Image (cartoon, rainbow, N blue to C red; front, top):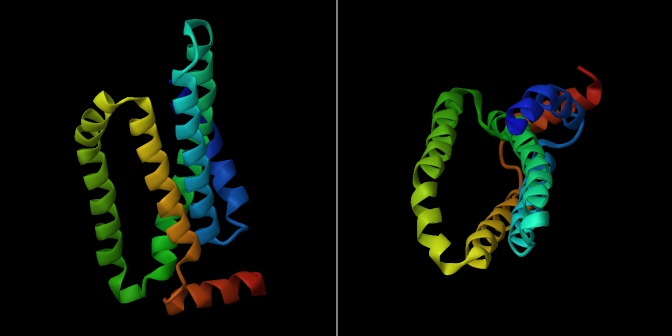
Length: 156
């Protein structure tokens, strides 16, 4: 429930605040925040019963903030990078990849969980950080993004 309250409360203001920055940088930031939360969950597993639950609750807030940052930047980046005549196809592929990840994640988590918390959370953190690095270092190839940047700089 805290996740829902945070998303409803913070999604719009955080997205508006971060819209001032390049979409690619914001998406990479979301990966860094999510990675930090996964490492936080890993650390919380080592705490005793008295501290484990509060630690998980605090780390869940960090994870939700990463989710909010991601949700506000991912679709916008796909839209900005895609030529107008391919926009529907690109958004469909993006949603398909997101849906596929959500569909297979229970099986992957189930396969990793028996190997311990470090394997589970470490793998997730590593994959997320690798993805964030790829997003941060990828060169823009779409002409629409350049046009968007020119309009943003011109104040329109």
